[in-house]
Image (cartoon, one colour):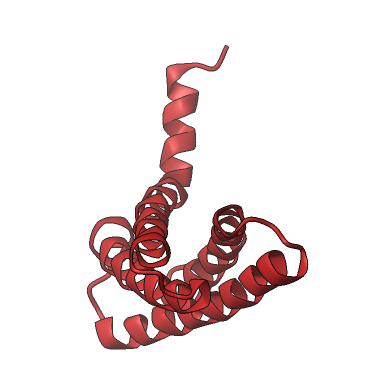
Length: 138
């Protein structure tokens, strides 16, 4: 059985990752809800809906990570540009994975979107942790 102290130590060591994950779930949830709304209720093409929904997720994620996770207030514009650039890379990956899974592999567009979110989120975490929110001490 794991002791309370061990769990506390683990949480403190992984705090940023845990909060990043929670914010990622919130941002991905927003992305997914907007995607579903645009594709199912407004009949947008799934790729166009993906572009819109991903942009909303990127902005949400930056604001929440800056405010609640990394709590870094300096160089906001520079950090936002880096974060957005990584987000656009994520959008490109998302676009490619969605096209591959929906049009080539013939997976359902909703399942494809969920798989794509997971893959892209992992790539973006690594890049944002090491580039966007890197501090001089890290």
